[in-house]
Structure formats: structure tokens, C-alpha cells
Length: 122
Image (cartoon, rainbow, N blue to C red; front, side):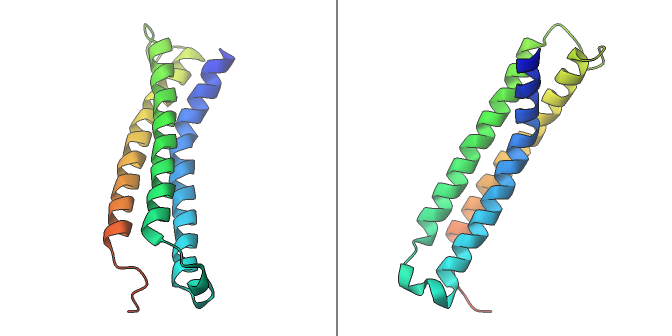
């Protein structure tokens, strides 16, 4: 039961954590690329964004797989069942839905940042 709980919490918080971290690291890469202090580093923005968002997407997919594992291991019960099995199944279903949304958001974020012009002063 303890392994299922660990998988369930990993699935529930994994996607949000990796999505948030990719935004923070992406902001840092943008600042390093566009600031006057980072001009000597010759940072390849598209490469870094692809790596950061690709890694975050893969880890988000792993969190979704953890959610699917909990759903499969608790089949035969309902999310309305008595705790702890019902609670595990409920959170795993919610985590699968959330991780799917986070994976789409990461993909859209990657497409937007790579196709956009970097360091354009407005």
C-alpha cells in the first residue's frame, strides 16, 4: 500500500512541479540570453528551451505513467470506495487528467518559445 501512495503523490504533484520548474529555468535562460551580462556566453536559446521543455515533458509523462499504474493496480474498486483504496484511485484519476493538461501546456510553451523572436525590444 505504501508504494501505491508514493506513486499516487508522484503522479499528482509531478506534472505541476516539472511544468513550474520549466518556466523558471526558461525565464532564466531568456534572461541570460537577452541581458547585457549574458552576451559573452553566446547561449543558444532554442537548444536550451528544447532541452528544458523536453526533459520536463518526459518527466511529466513519467508522472502520468505513475498515475496509470495506480489506476491499474486499484482496478476492481471505485473512487467512491472506502479509504485508502478509494482515495488512491480518486487522486490517481485526477493526476492523470492534470498531467495530460500539463503535457499539452509544455508542448505549447515549447512551440511558442522556439518559434518566437528572442530578445525583441518592444
